[in-house]
Length: 251
Image (cartoon, rainbow, N blue to C red; front, side, top):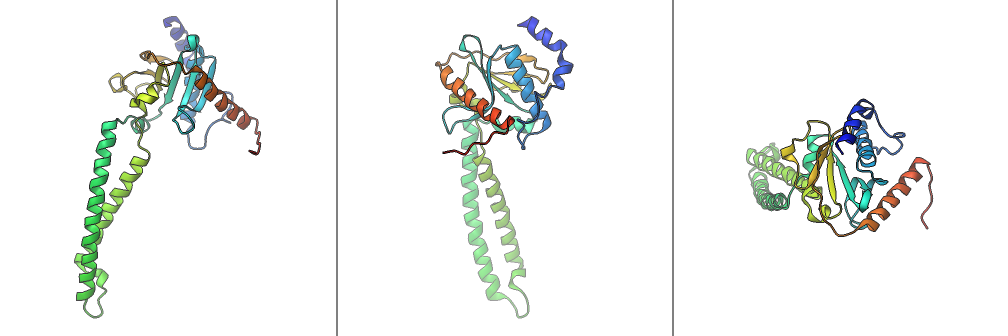
């Protein structure tokens, strides 16, 4: 393994410019650098992990399961998952625990209660402003009403933001069901973006030169190779059709 990594390091300059056969598989939402990192991960899976079945953007855990950036099957049916992270913000989005989810849910409940309270105060302030408005003066300029409206809008904005956060809340790095999908889990990230101490349990680390920075812990999982191979085949068929611009109407 060490010799292979050393040989891989020698060609790191070429790796940095490696983008795969073309950008035809690049999604509109991802940056060029993220796409480059995906191909660096693909190269590691093929050259170092010796996977001969590799797929990008593969959906695992059933039709409503998680989508992984890359998954490969290597020797002895070992399954490898690689998640690509090009920024710390991207990393943090998936690095949540169930404790974080419970905390966020409690914060949402508190904000909902606060929104109900400020709505009541706003309604009372509106009624008071209308009843006490002097002739020729718009009741909406009443200072009590203006203050109550400002407080309510602030809480409503915070509530909407928290609701969006929970909709996209991800515990991927710590989810036992996701960790049970593969023998090895790796994060592919630019050198220096993630410290060793920040790695989630059971995860290893790769850099943009297709080098292993931290080795992942091998997990003993139930055999799910057939399921993974089927998912890879479906993803690769999709990508081949996209690359060849094949469009077939579903029956």
